[in-house]
Amino acid sequence: MTSTMQSGEASRGADAQRLHHIGLTVSDLEESLRFWEQLFGVTANSRRLLDQPHIGSIVGHPGVAIDAAWIDVPGSEAVLELVHYLNRDGTPIDDDTINEGNVHFCMEVEDMDAIWARAVALGARPLSGVPVEVPTGPAKGARIVYMRTLDGATIEFIQPPPGS
Image (tube, helix red, strand yellow):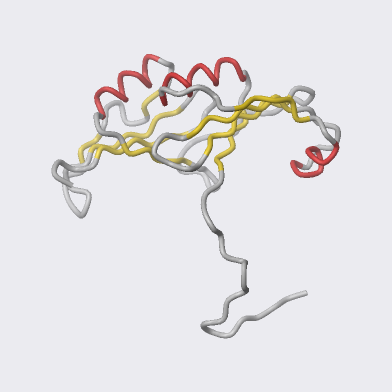
């Protein structure tokens, strides 16, 4: 069934309301929890086993069991959901930022040098070697870096330009 909407029409209630969570499949939940808790300076707000039949239906893997934990994302109402599949083996994705479907999320930081040092000490790998200062345009003076986490996720940190 297809539906066409006239210009200016909207389906009542069909608009996204807010970012609810960001999910990340991990190979080792304990190690990932340590990384994210220490990076964000918070502890997981919940952890539980998800093995009910509807979970397998939702994720497209009937019979799956998942060990999951949720961490509040600082400065946001969103939550980072760490998911470890217990009875299925996954394959690491090709996480190069140029690949279609690659996802990253960006955290604004006050002190790039401090977050850089903490992330590297926790095992994150910077893609640019060092934070890059934006030389021109609307973000001139901002410092930005992409880093790869332990499980291959890409996280971007941005320190806004001075005085912004």
